[in-house]
Amino acid sequence: MTKDMNTIQSIILGVIQGITEWLPISSEGQTIMFATGLLGITASDALSYAIFLHLGTMIAVLIVFRHTWFEILTLRDIGLLRILFVTSICTGITAVPLYFLLRQTFESGIAVTVIIGVLLIITGIMLRAKRSGFKDISAMKIRDMALLGCIQGFSVLPGISRSAVTISTLLMRGFSSDVALTVSFLVSVPPVIGVIILDWGTTPISYETGFFMAVTAAIVGYFAMEILLKVARSVQFSLFCIIIGILAILAGIL
Image (cartoon, rainbow, N blue to C red; front, top):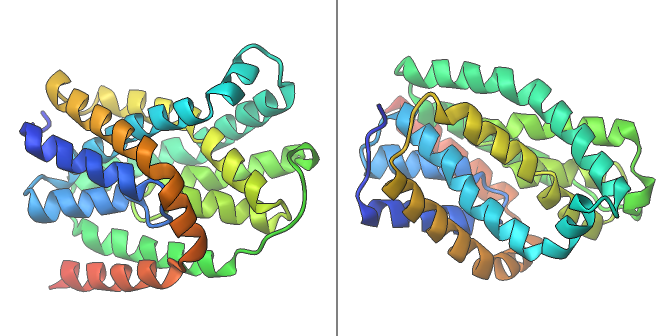
C-alpha cells in the first residue's frame, strides 16, 4: 500500500509538478528525487506519486488547448486525430514494457538516484542536439508520428524529459518550433491517462492526497505554463540536466 502524505506534502509535490512539467528537466525525475530524499517516501511509492501528478498538468494542457481539443473530439481535425492515434499506439509499445521494468527495478531497492542521474545526463545530451526546421504540421508523415510516439514512450523513465525528447525529435525531423511545441503537448494527453490507469491498480493513492496533488499541479501549471515556456526557450537546460545528473549519481553512490 502506498504511503500516504499529509496535505502540505501533497501541495508541495503539486507545485513542483506544475513548475517542472514545462521545463525540459524531467518533472518525474525531480519529483522522485524530492520525495525520496526529503520526504522519506520509498522509491516505489514516489514513482506512483510522480505518475499521478501528471493528471494535474494534463488538465492544464486540456484547458489551454481547449479549442484544439474541441476540434479533435468533434472530428473536425482528422489530421490531429490521426497524429494522436498513431503516436499513442507507438508510445504504448515502448512505454508499457518499460513501465513494468521500472516498477520491478524500483521495488528491488536499487539506488534510484543513480538511474535518474544517468537518464538526466542523456536528456541533457539530447537537448544539445536539437535544431529547428520549417515544416508545418500538415507535412507530418506516418513515420514521423511513429517515431515521435516510440520516443515519447521512453519518457516513462524518470530522468528522461518528455517535452525535451519529443520536441527535439520533431525539430530534428525538420518541423518548426511552434509545431513541435504544440504537437508535443497534445500527444502527451492519451499516454498520461493510460499510465495513470496502468499504475493505479498497483499502488492506490488516497482520494484526499490525489485531490490536493492534482488540483495544485493543475492551478500552478496553468498559470506558470506561458512564463516557463518562454524561460525554456531562452535558457540552455542541457548543462543543468547534466550537472544535476552527475550530482544525483554521486548522491546515489555515496
